[in-house]
Length: 400
Image 1 (cartoon, rainbow, N blue to C red):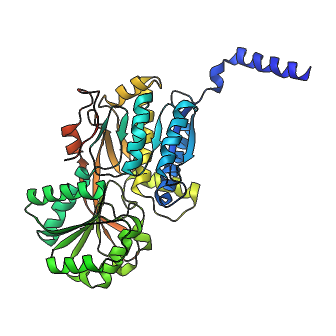
Image 2 (image 1 turned 90 degrees about the vertical axis):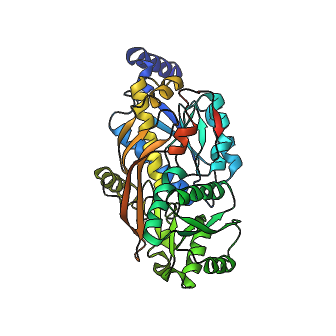
Image 3 (image 1 turned 120 degrees about the horizontal axis):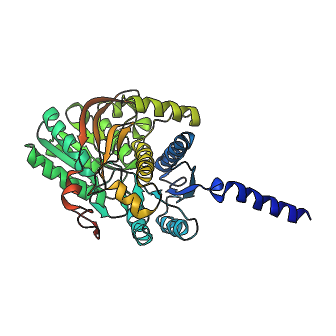
C-alpha cells in the first residue's frame, strides 16, 4: 500500500508540473585532480565548478540548471580516453571541458568528433589543432610568442638562446621563435631540446655562456623549469642575460622559485592574477570566498572559466543544447564577452579565442607585475590554416 501511494504521488507531481521541472543540462569535466599534473587540474576543475555555480545563480542556461559530471584523469593518458567514452556512452553530457596536455587533447578529440559533442580545450599550447567539435580557449604559440619575442628583442637585444623540452610543445614553439626572430631582427645563437628526465642543467648553462645570448627563451615544464631557473641564477648569469618564457607561471612556478631566481623573469600569457579588470577582481573575490586559498589563480583556470561562459552564451543563442546548433552559434562570430583577462571573442573559422596577451615581470615576492598588454591578440596561424566554416570536415593538427 505504501509503495502504491508513493508511486501515484510521483505520477501526480509529474502530471501537474511536467517532467521538465526536474530537467538539468549535463556537462562533462575530465581534469587531473591527482597525480603529477594536479597543480593544473585542480584549478581547472575549481574554475569549472565556480563558473557553473555563477551561471546557475543567475537562472542557469535556458532556465535550466547546469550539472557537472566530473572525472579524475589521475595524470594518466589512458584515463582520458576511458572517461571520455564513459561520458559519451553513459552519462548523456551535452558538452565536455577537459585536458591539459596536447597528448590528452589528441587522445580524446576523435571520441568527441565521432559523438559530435562540443569539446573545449583550455590550456596554452603549441597551436594548430583544427576540428569541427574542438574549441580552444587557451593561448596558442602564435598568440604568445610573437609579442614576447618582439618585446624581448627590444628590451635585451637581438641574440637569443632557445631551451625547450623535446616534444611537440618545445619543438613547435622553437619553430615560432625562429620565425619571429627573423621578423623582428633577432638571431637564434643556440638551441637545445632536453628530455623531461634531465635535472642537471650544468652542460646547458655552459653552452649558454659560450653562445653569449642577450636573453634565453626558457620553455621547460613543471619542476624542470624551476630546476633550470634556480641553477641559471646560481651560476650568476642573470646579471647579463635576460630570461623569458611563454609558460612560466602557468603552474605557479613563481611560488616555489627562490626570490633571487624569480625576480626579473619575463613571462607571457593570456592571464595572470595581477591583471586589473573589474571581472578579474570579481573572480578573485569569488574564488577566495569559495576556496579560501592563497594560491594564485593560473591561466588554465581562467581559460576554463571562459570556456564555460562561451558555451553557455552559445546555448542561449542557439536556444537549445543540440550540438549542431551550439557549434553553429560558436561559429557565428557573436560569442564575445568581458572576461577576467579582458575582452575575449571566439574566432568563427579556427575555433580559437581572440584575447589579450600580457607581458609580466616576476618580483622578489613570488608575484608578477604587468609591463605591457597586447590587446585583442589573434590566433594568427590557426586563422590561416584552419577555416572550419568553409571546410567543416577538417580534422587535423597543423604544424608549421
